[in-house]
Structure formats: structure tokens, C-alpha cells
Image (cartoon, rainbow, N blue to C red):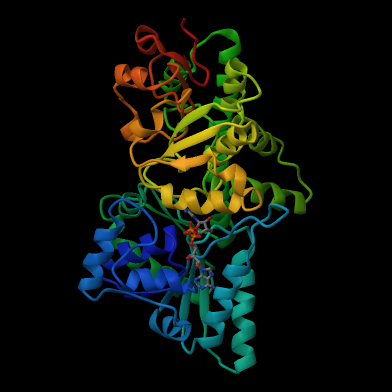
Amino acid sequence: MKITIIGTGYVGLVTGACLAEIGNDVFCVDVDARKIEILNSGGVPIHEPGLQELIARNRAAGRIQFSTDVEASVAHGDIQFIAVGTPPDEDGSADLSHVLDAAYSIGKHMTGFKVVVDKSTVPVGTAQRVGEVIREQLDARGVAANFSIVSNPEFLKEGAAVDDFMRPDRIVIGCDDDRHGAKAREMIKRLYAPFNRNHERMLYMDVRSAEFTKYAANAMLATRISFMNEMANLADRVGADIEAVRRGIGSDPRIGYDFLYAGCGYGGSCFPKDVQALIRTAAESGQHLHILESVERVNEQQKQVLVGKIVKRLGEDLTGRRFAVWGLAFKPNTDDMRAASSRVLVAALLARGASVVAHDPVAMGEARRVFAIDFADQPEVLERLSYVDEPRQAVAGADALVIVTEWKAFKSPDFSYLKTQLKTPLIFDGRNLYDPPTLAEQGIEYYGIGRPEIA
Ligand code: NAD
């Protein structure tokens, strides 16, 4: 099938590459000429396991192309996927300007029937607005073409995006039930049939419910994390081990093990903004989402929990102290730094006079970019942040090691070596990677999140 993907970010690129892999003819368009240039010269502007190989293979086979040519992109696809960003506006609501720009382009250039699939995470009612923008453009041009808007929210996880797309738990399809909606549904059903062979994964529903489903899913996951973080903070006070508690409750099939890890807060491009956007949507319709307001508040506080432990142990003034920070990305296997906990932690350490030597397996380029923006008006503070290529280099001479992202490479370090390198054998672990008794045996002072302190 002929497919256009609008937006070559985490979702658009993965969608385009995976749809090309199963034999479709895919045209990816982006307004960011730099990204298109990188893609056309054989690179990939983001880090996502397996994506580079997938794109290279399909580009060589002539099944995927990249361009900034909007008119050509609209002409290409019978199905037009909108996969542009929906960042938070100042009031927390989703900024729909990119989505509506994409709709405008489609309406401005289309000449025949199109299925417009919204893959971006958008508030309930957005499909209707997308349809209105397209219709306005068609009317302005006096073109009588038809179209149907489908809501197909994306559930992939950064760091495992290709796998998630290729083996989805479910594919949510929101369609209108008119004639064009029925035609769109058949086309989408055919497009996704290869992902649906093993068992039925397609969930058909109305457009508004599909739009809502994505927010409700992320809100539920964020709730589990904030719930566990609150339990962990209590475990800290009462001397229980949240890891034991996690296993104790996760073994109940009604609860399950996933998304029960306590830590130094969730980040990324989805949970924080989607929780906020749902709170805004509710406020606009006159409802308070009490639970989600707390979820968000707990998460903001949780990003400060490591800082609190460091200050409690080493004092408020950290001038002259040096911290090794392992992990900058908001989670492993990605270079995404959006709303990452590391940004709060590093800023707090620098603000208290400390210097930070940071390492991340893939996010250092992105970290340099975002910290340069975060500290644009404090260049003298930014000078105290440096980066090293190896985790071991960070700890040499440091007053403490702080772990912010649970990369595999950090899970089993040589503790005796660490002890010889650290100025003080002190670890603050924001992801509960280590076993407190083992560290105690090694003579390392260890602070996790909701873990007992063993002298
Ligand atoms: P992103 O910021 O990585 O990429 C968006 C891309 O769209 C950018 O390259 C940007 O230049 C491009 N763009 C903006 N306006 C455009 C236009 N008018 N025409 C063409 N290109 C345009 O975003 P992302 O992380 O891929 O997220 C996209 C959407 O998918 C968001 O709504 C997000 O909430 C949702 N989502 C993201 C994830 C995730 O893990 N990143 C998962 C599920 C859903």
C-alpha cells in the first residue's frame, strides 16, 4: 500500500520503517530539513535499537524515502499518518499546532480520497478539528475529494519501539461509522493484517474513545509509578524494603509486576505531558481529576528525592564536592532527555556548588544540547558539568556515585574497583539496581529509594 508518514520522530520513523519492512511503499516527510538530510545520507537522527538497520534495508530496497516536499508527500499516500509532536502548551494542554499544520497541508494538496490516520497523542475531539481543517482547505480550493479520519494511537515504548510495533499487544482503531469510515476501516484492517496473524489484536471503536484510550493508558501507568514511589517513601520511613514489597504485591495476578518499580521519578516525552493534558481536558469540561493531580505532584517531588538523600548525608552546601552521575536519558535504550529526572538532579547538584561528571551510553550528545539550553543564562554553572565516555572514568575521585537511569551496563559493576576509585565509598541509587546487603559487605554506603540502610 502507498503510505505517507508526516513527522520523522520516534513514532513516525518507527511506523514508517516497520510498514516498509512488511512491503509497503512509504514516504516520510518532515519540516525539519536537518533530520531529512541525516536520513537521506544514511543516518538516523534518534537512537532506537534496530531502527538503523531496518531503515537501511528498506531504503536499499526502495520501500522507504525521506523528503521535505509536502506536496509530493500528500500525493504519495492513500493513507496519511500524522505522527508529529504534541508538546505541552504553557497551561499543560496539548499543543495541537503541528497536528493542525499537517491537516492543513493534506487539505491544501489532496485531490482524491485519503485516509488520514492520527497516530499522535491528541485530546478527544482532535480528529474532528483535523477534519474541519482539511474540509476548509478543500472548500477553499473548490475540490470535491473525500476523506476519513481514523484515530490510531501508538503504544510503542522508546527503547523497544521496533519490537513493540512489530509485535503489538493491541492495535486500537477509532473510525467513523459512515460510508467513508467503513472504507477507511477496511484499508487500515488490510494494512495491519500482517501484525494480526497470530491472534486478534485489532480493537475497533469510535474515534473519541480511541483518542481517550491513549491518555487513559498512560495515566494508568503513571499512576502505578507514583503509587509505588509514594509507598517507597513510606518504606524509607518505616524501615521496609520496597523491592520486597514490590515482589509481594506483584505476585498477585490482579496487580502484576509491570510498572511497579520505585525510583527517582518518571520522565520522557509522554507520561508527564499526557497526564497534564488529561488534567487540562478534564478541567475544560468542569471536572477535577484528583488522582492524576496527585500522580503529577508526587512525580515532581520524586525527582527531588535523591537530592534530599544527598543533602541529608553531605549537607546543603555541596561546594567543592564532585558527583559521578550514571545515566542521563529518561530511561534506558534511548537518547531522549525530555523531562528526564537527570535534568532535575544535575541542576540541583550544580545549584548547590557541586561539580558533576556524567556518563550515559547513548544520550550524551542530546544531554549536551539540552543542558546548554537549560543553563543558557548560567554558563559559569554549566562549566561544572562534564562528560566522560566510560562509566569508570566518572567515578575516579568522586565524592559519590549517583545512578539515575537503569542502563544494563550499570547493573553489575565491579564494586571493589568502584570503592578504590571513589573518594568516599558512597552510592545514591535512583533506580534500586543493587542489593543493600551486598553493598554493605563491600563496605559501600548505599542509599536506594525505599530500601533499608544497612550499616
Ligand atoms: P518527535 O518530537 O520525536 O517527532 C515529531 C516530528 O514531527 C519532528 O521531527 C518534527 O520536526 C515533525 N513535525 C512537526 N510538525 C510537522 C509538520 N507540520 N509536518 C511534518 N513534520 C512535522 O515526537 P514523537 O516522540 O515521535 O511523538 C509524536 C507523537 O506520538 C506525540 O503526540 C507523542 O505523544 C506520541 N507518542 C510518542 C511516543 C514516544 O515514545 N515518543 C509513544 C507513543 C505516542
